[in-house]
Length: 500
Image 1 (tube, rainbow, N blue to C red):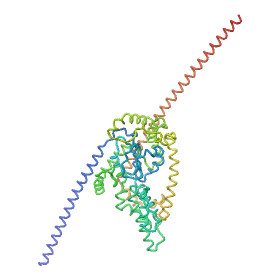
Image 2 (image 1 turned 135 degrees about the vertical axis):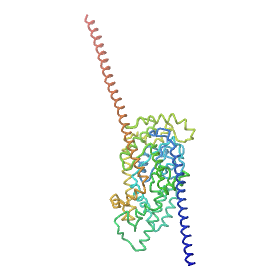
Image 3 (image 1 turned 135 degrees about the horizontal axis):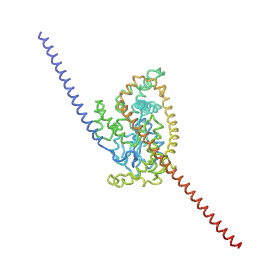
Image 4 (image 1 turned 30 degrees about the vertical axis):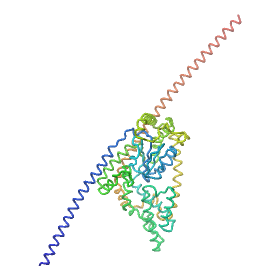
């Protein structure tokens, strides 16, 4: 009996301890949420209070291309911006290396995977931001495929140690590598280590044939897509990546509070709404928002909205637009001229005024007498060559991990359940993309209105010119006839006098 009593007492104590533990955890969970909510709301409030003072439709002194990975931004850099801006006008190591201070004499263009927190290093009132967004599901696929593709290039080495040493030697020579660029400096080494581990496992098992026909589920060769999306690294960097980047909260952020805000949002999903609200506001304040899926319309809009204003600034002329945002360009020039001196010394800015750009720095914009139409033609030619080069490199890389040959047809083999999981994991990006589609539609309408207005102005000018021309011709003909009549009259009079 006494023994049973001890057992019962022990059981009661155990139940009591478990109850106390549960209550404590519940209290801590509640307090933890409240603390996180306070942190996120405070950050969101301060972020939303930052207003863009200048007209967002006018290109300012510095163009910041916020390049969301796998959206086609690199083609814009090479095929649009390289045509507009001379290399001397790019901010130091623009695009290729991060964690830099872009302020230098003549700095006019910054293209980078850095997030929006980079604006803390810039002069906000003198900076225009542009970006491109992509369907979140397609972007996840593309990020996965590119991570594997780049990692597969290292499989020419006999083992991981050799591959790591070689990449280290190359980077020590100051050559630019994908491993230097966020987010690939995290994703590629992760995939590279995984590829070598799977190759070693195949060699140990004597396995040379892969039975799976689904390129996204060839676990003998490559980490399957379903494993990839559920890995903590992917959850930290890939999922909702566009929203975090536009909001300025990636793990590469310059904000001191970014880590705490990210931690809270990843821990409590409902707090993501605050981040989404800030990201939407950031898109609203941008000069241009493109969509990867609307390739032709996006390119045309970029040439008209950004290109014509850049040409106008860089060449000091407002006559290069092809019936485009002429009014905006003229307004931009006057605004920059009048407001620059007032802010230049106050902000200690080192960005050049448009009329301070030398002929050498004007690049192809001046040399080719660029217009929006010529810019589009050059872009189409450039992108065709760029895609061909990229495709050849991709094919060569994926040969090393055949049959993991990623194609559009291969994506159709991915189950609906997995697609739904990707959608759920990227719910913030899904909502941000929908919002971007609305902005894009409004941009398109505004561009068409500007074209119509400009065409009407040009047409009115042509009509006036034609009317003036006809009037001038009529007057000139009349004067000629009068003069001729006068000559004939005088001649006839003299002839009659001679006869007399």
